[in-house]
Image 1 (cartoon, rainbow, N blue to C red):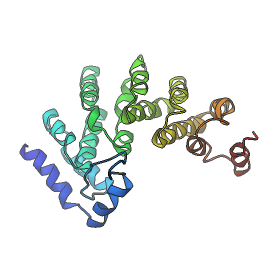
Image 2 (image 1 turned 60 degrees about the vertical axis):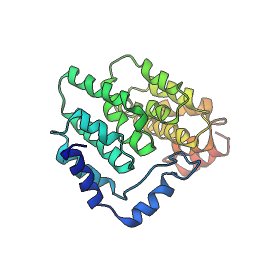
Image 3 (image 1 turned 180 degrees about the vertical axis):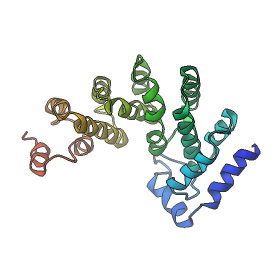
Image 4 (image 1 turned 60 degrees about the horizontal axis):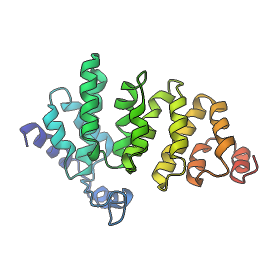
Length: 238
């Protein structure tokens, strides 16, 4: 470990809250059989992690980010991803952006919980692939690996915000009957975001699928609907 990586870890440890360290393993399901099995927590709030990331993102090397991203502590990994996002967002050169994208993809195995996915993928992959061919995301969706599949779905958030719905809808359809509720939540969340941009697009998808789609995905998708319409849809009577 370099002096800088040790500095980052020490800064996070200094912000540790014992009550959070005790709560997070339950919240992120790190118990045996949970989706985050074996993960360890310092108990650091996200705003504090972002502060640490902003202090070092301009000077830290890829090798040092890699070391942090492989750390046993959840907050160290998340902070390293914030560092990567801040760095990426400052880049103007496509060559430099691609280097970050390639680095991110080569470390995807360490992006291994929903907050790690959600805090990074759409900022990096979503941005980079906005106007590029999107086979990568269909491959991730077909990978059979939970976090890669969530990366595929949540990366579409960047496109949705720019009224690009085609791939988001196709990936939602591909992942609609996934066995895990974390994918149901991601699908429902992205459908809701589509509705925020264009309600007709979301409604067309729901009309086709709402009777058979997982309940969690449906509830997320219609969360902000008028209560009467939401009740009607949940009753299968739309």
